[in-house]
Image (cartoon, rainbow, N blue to C red; front, side, top):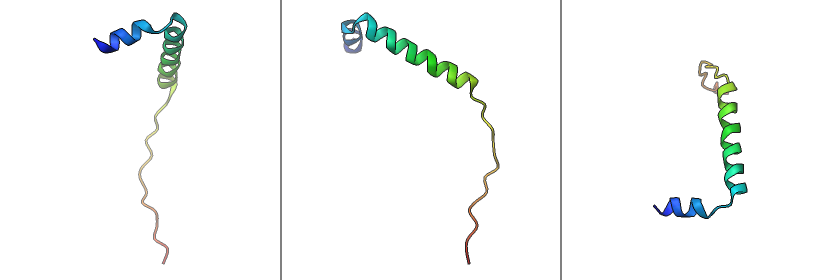
Amino acid sequence: MDQLRTALKRTYMERFKMMTTLMKMNIMFRKAKITHKPFHPPKEIS
């Protein structure tokens, strides 16, 4: 309930900026291609 009150206090511009930030992140994550590389432990220098 407290979070809702603080969210409503924010201006339209603040909410808009937050929404666009989330949308940009969403697009970025959708475009991101995860490649799995086999893990190679660092070789010990003797």
